[in-house]
Length: 201
Image 1: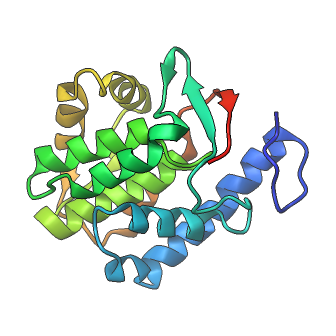
Image 2 (image 1 turned 180 degrees about the horizontal axis):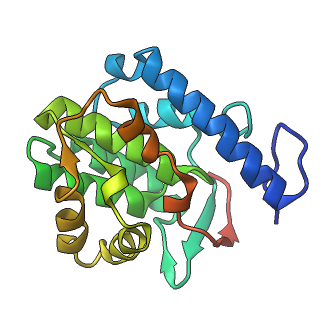
Image 3 (image 1 turned 30 degrees about the vertical axis):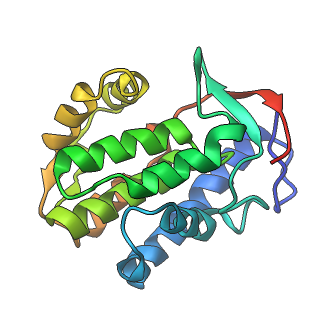
């Protein structure tokens, strides 16, 4: 299934290529224009703005809460009917320590508020919180992609693994473009979402 898009692309592989190309270009703009610095760290409103900026040229739903239920393998992300309360709860979660920030990141991953582009948006969102709260970011170059995806899949049950994995990659290079851009790499994303029930918001 190819997501409806503003580019009129009907081939999934071509859409993936254009999505990565455009979203990386927009991510560089976010970084180089300093647009992230004016955003409030740790809120869904900020995550929504990041998502809209990255994907607005591609998807009509950029920045909008999804209106379908999605799953990956046997794991179902937050059902649409509970999504808004879940996001409101995440907004109130503390974020003053590294552990609290990663707990918040794990909860946002479970929420998976958008139809597509959650991973890239959330990693920028995570680094913004880390940067503003503890003066660190993740050096994604130091993280094995397979280890990361497995740890994220297990994180709703046990978050120790993802906390340790990311902690080992913390750096104070908070203004390094290469470190920032590695987090936008689409290969860190979950693949193979499927919709298991459609319902309106």
